[in-house]
Image (cartoon, rainbow, N blue to C red; front, top):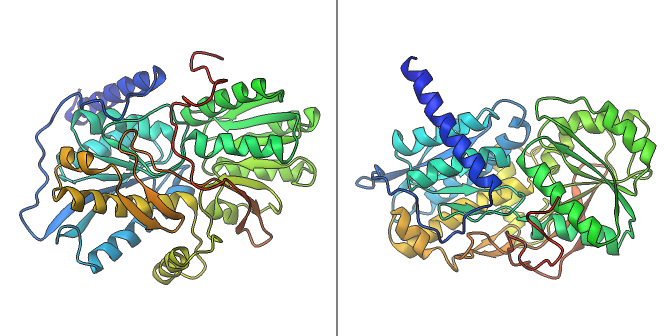
Length: 416
């Protein structure tokens, strides 16, 4: 076995440990690191390194390239304002290539070889689960910017996307109370997030007299949705709840359109289609619904400035979306934590995190030091003919994060 093979095998074993830990339930954010590795972060000069870890290739690149772009904008703005504790940010960009084991390998490289102060990135829950034991064992920081299935709160991770009670459960409440649905069909990619999200959806449905008429999955690298769409046509649900990720959404919605389905016949609620993905799908999505916490169309001075700056840097044809806004916000929150701690040391930053705020494009966000999530307002959106998304319903203000669903009597983590 050569050196590279041994290295990959070692990383793979760490990923397996992380997957097992996730399956057994997440640790609380206050749990101490399993090991305290010696940091090699160099703060002696005028710069400090941070790592961007996003899929620039593979099935998830349709979504993750934009996250890297928004992180780049945040870093540029922070540097223009004098940096963090007077130090300019030096970016080390790595490609996770849509493969969890590569995310783990690259995270290890960023921490141990590039000596970054924090990592920003990941999209799929599989990528996060793969990186989790790496950042934990090496006592580093990961800022994860995407909505996910919850049931996790790790000391070394900050979650700036929505957890389940800030996206999926409010969407189900909207469908039940506003759309008066009696039945639902579940379509998802075959990995951690959709499987766990749909477990939560099925328990919600059972508690609220909503019939689940079908549940179909495809792996991220496959787009064979014909059989699933045929089942949707056959069962005629009131709505399809879509937890498909990446470019598989293109194949699913093209098949949906080819079978004569639309928002007028059987509407879809998607939790991983934002403005970037909608623009890449060459079918009429008008009227299809989404559940997020930010849209480009949000009306506020902070969002207007964000959209203007993003388009000025990357082109007027570009759009902004929830995950990229959450990533942009994450870098500013890290800056706030470091400056509150007056230190780049991981333990000091974690200790200082509680209560750090940022006036983000989605609104003012506050870090919860207990679970490392942030309060977020849920927005149900409707795709417009121009592929932008307009808010049609919102929660009554920001929803406090409840990643373990402790406030929901119907939830049983050991149930089906």
